[in-house]
Length: 203
View 1 (cartoon, rainbow, N blue to C red):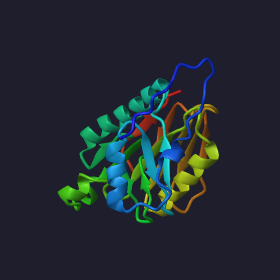
View 2 (view 1 turned 45 degrees about the horizontal axis):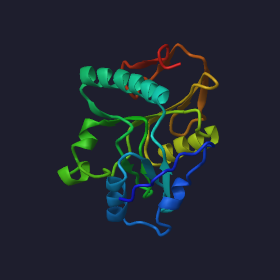
View 3 (view 1 turned 90 degrees about the vertical axis):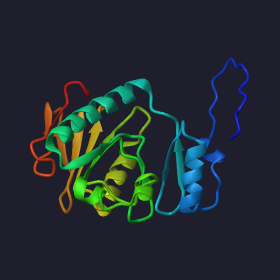
View 4 (view 1 turned 30 degrees about the vertical axis):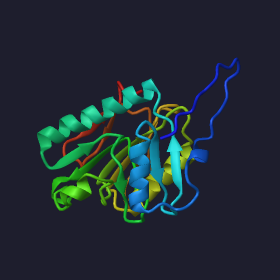
């Protein structure tokens, strides 16, 4: 892995992270090794094979991500019907893309059908439930397109949290997205039985 030596500069500058990515379509094995060599970056792959590289999340966004994951994880421990994953987990969707939702949950019977080697890589499975939290640098349109892609690949419930506009977009298959204005909670029934996402500490 090459380390960039950055001189002391009086003016900020921008590094084009995409320039560090090979321009050829990567195989599953090549993509896996590329991600292993660049663990500090957030890397996803589109269905077209294009690799998207982003910097790590800012501290405030990471804090809110954790609060969401904590709520889902606490519920999942009590419910016992599935496994919860944070933003570091990548999944290979049926369309060939590799995504890392900020928070995700997979039903236990589906997760247990995978082999140990599949679980140890970018598991070939689409989560049942995903959450994406919009950061200050995220395009709302790009995240909305991402949520639609999740639905097309098998997600049963998707939540897009837009802190900037204090709205929550709720996605379910074959339904128009429901937009909630500044909600106190987001009801995740019946997909996540008995779970409501509390928004107080996420805003």
